[in-house]
Image 1 (tube, one colour):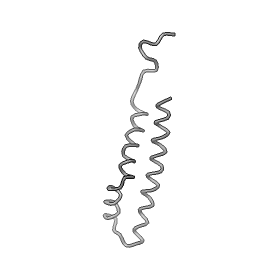
Image 2: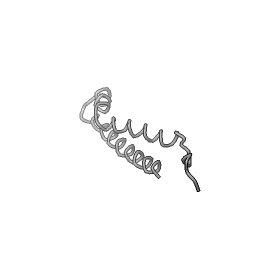
Image 3: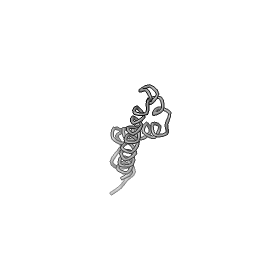
Image 4: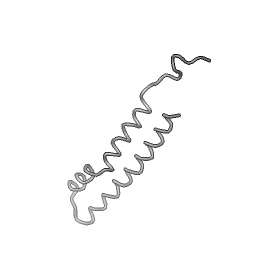
Amino acid sequence: MTRLFLFLISYGLIVITVSNMIFYFNYITLGYSWKQIFVFILTTGDFILFSFSVITLLLTVFVRVPSRLPFYEE
């Protein structure tokens, strides 16, 4: 249940942060260069949150955990 909760939260954060980062590309119409936009994106909190969300998502999907605890008795 915890893995499902972490998966859904991290997936939601990835969607939100990527959509915010896509909005930053509208700065091209204001005369900013691609380099300036990418440096700005890399220094925002959205990118840091995106990075942690991707790491959390990958850990919840690819890290194997036992289905039962060793001391669990039925």
